[in-house]
Length: 152
Image 1 (spheres, rainbow, N blue to C red):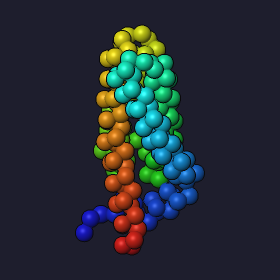
Image 2: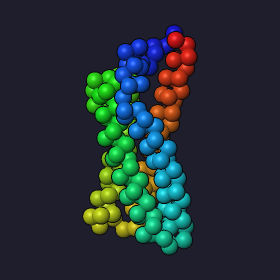
Image 3: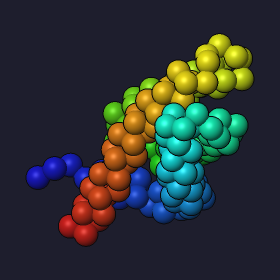
Image 4: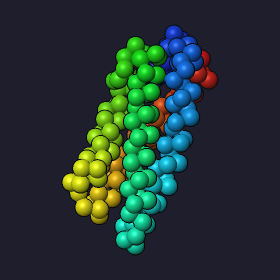
């Protein structure tokens, strides 16, 4: 049998943490913003118009990501006693670091003027692909947590 995602104590801490609700609200908001932003980015790449809207949407998505990562580390500390790389979410945190790096590179490319618009938008799509992998990791963990709770 597979080891449960949470011990009984960790589950209790998870349920008490105010950051559990914050993460539960921010996650779908971030996904919705990413979907709209991806559409704007793809539209720009296809038509060459709408750069300002596409760029602004990626910046907004990145700010939400930073908020999610910050509050997520507080959640992880509440539940596991570590801000990052707790045993249960180690690989999710590793991929999250890649997602953060790609989004941060976008900000440097955009706000620092280091990249032209087209390569910048391609970078946004790469960042979104990494985010999608990371989101899938977390969805699978949520499923694992639910199944282990039902089994207990």
